[in-house]
Image (cartoon, rainbow, N blue to C red; front, side):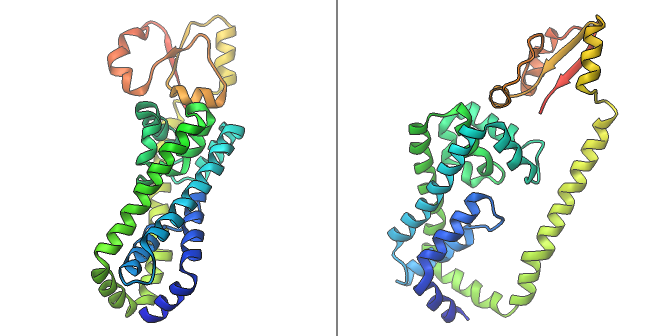
Length: 270
């Protein structure tokens, strides 16, 4: 089995590596790390050229990220909303990436590919106006080299161990395939879905519709609105609440004295 795989990768390896990494970076559920590890291991056997494999992987990353960067610049919130809808954590995918980019700037692109959930929205969020194109290209290029190089290097260094694991798993390939393709993903998705439904049930009784809030304001009620959105999110949505008190969630404890206690408080978030 291993020899057949090596023969296949020898003929189509670079093309397969390019397509696989490109597909993962575009958002398809195809983890590229195992393919990069395998490419590194094959480079250790002389089947691949390590430098060429690194160039192919980085090229795939850059092509995808540049596409999403321009989509974020053109589509802004619509693109991010689309990505977050297909995310397993739509309530927090932009928030976590906004916090990371807002705190560390474009330097965060060096590590976003290593963090599940951040990679999907980092490029379009940067393109929405947070990062200029030259700085994006520079840091995204370095981040792609770091990400691809890490897994290629690990595969190269531990090629012997990886071959042993491949031989062992080859004896249980059908059971392994069932677990990887069906059982584990289905279980994880079911867990995240149940977790999110529980969260929504907990807050559903405390929600207020925008129309109802507007009616209260027009009726003269003194309502305090606290805007909890990250500054990058308000730039993407192009919506600003003039009378709202802008406070980040992590600042609530330090700034809670700014919120009046004699009026009803409405929290606005994504």
